[in-house]
Image 1 (cartoon, rainbow, N blue to C red):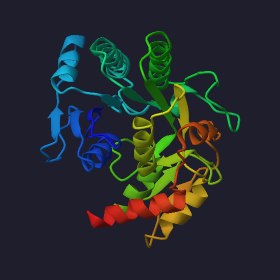
Image 2 (image 1 turned 90 degrees about the vertical axis):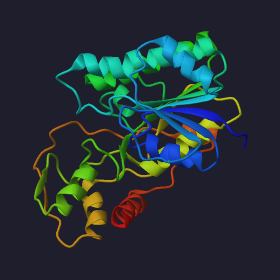
Image 3 (image 1 turned 30 degrees about the vertical axis):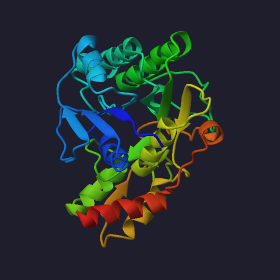
Length: 303
């Protein structure tokens, strides 16, 4: 593998930080952008906390560090954030993305651009095994920003020839997640010895993916050197019910105080198909809900 100079946005986040560490281990030069500074200490890492509010500043950064690949994992990271400030969601998720891709187009030396999109771009998934051709119908502003960027970046892929891969991730869980996620909520409430009532029935199934699978997928796509499509669905290998999730977490704690509601307060999402990325990129997830929770708890205990 040739060493690369890689720009990673969201470099202190749930996905960005383990990506920084993983790619640094391969002696690449990593440039991180994130308003939150991380604790990465390496001569091959540079961190920038600025807002990069214009294309020229991003272009200068790409040029100064001779960036060859971009992983765009930054932005507002879920529909639970900044709902009273929609302008900030649009600024972080849409406007910054467009400055980043336009600077990449002008720079002309980016040979792979990975965009971390989301299952939220689809909105309600009421069918099993839907493919990447399924219509976008986001049900919140966050999902709308992901759908908008997905559509805009596809035009850059088709009309300007930029090498872009959009990865539409299902719900990501992992120890370092700072925003709300029911797996994280269950574990956190248990550690604090607090009772938790979940707003759905125990048989509700949800499409989760463990952060280690997200990192391995991005890395596989980053260095894939054959012909590829623009967009790929990405999820875990199983489709667990919350009853199953509770059973797995309960193996590691003495007294879970978790209750379920008698009804589902939101629509169930079916599991979409990941056959396209399996066939094209030769990648598939390794972390079942059992393996993911085991690794999650292990890392939690080692801190």
